[in-house]
Length: 361
Image (cartoon, rainbow, N blue to C red):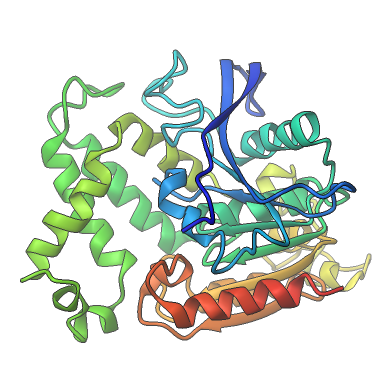
């Protein structure tokens, strides 16, 4: 838990122009602050939220992993999570059934927050898990001069084809509910939410987690009880339009597209090594290599050994495209949740050590 309560704060953005076009009217960011900003403003850590996470779900990181005696931690809710501007709390709903926001917008809004509220142009560190890691990658690619360090935990800079299958299954689960009319929900999609929770429970944890009966160790009599009592409430509390909004942002996650780099005009594998003669011919991921080659930040990439969303191979392949990036694996059977180890001290210690190493000048 954080060392002291951090009250919610709201940063008004006004009518916020979206990168893909259009306006998010009267937009705002919800954020929390832990620790004290140094006089020279050199110790601010930006901590963007993950999928479905509210600040009280992930603020436990302050203390075990991010030391509030050293850092001023700014935990910011991404657009669409129900706390910052979202379909559920504003006039900015889904457009033709989709959310028109992407990570470029999260980064632009967060940049304004840091500059206008904290007078910080370049945070000391951007620390993110899952969709928070996606935002950290976008910061490093879109704002290379402003991004000093990133710690990307169980997340990738581009959503892989396999990960898309998971996300599309979640979206299909919700929108197959009879309360969905093609543009919005006309009631609570109870059937869709139950399927959604089942899919999430099968992907977020790992096969070894279930094999050792971890759900029983947590006090659940069966897998069915685990889903019903632990997973379903976690998503039932959200407006389903917000769940779709965050899925749409995750589906669109791609730093190359965000930076306007296409495979046709990207350099090839040599880009990360500074080879101007390298070409994209025969390399379908040359655009990603070019985008990640822009990163100047000191970078730590941390994967979960049994993460089914963001596999160690996928995370390591991206880390190899970033100059000087450090890659390591969390040896944990918690699956994707190894990167958010609220009740796992060994994983906490490894993440704390990774942050300390990254931030040792």
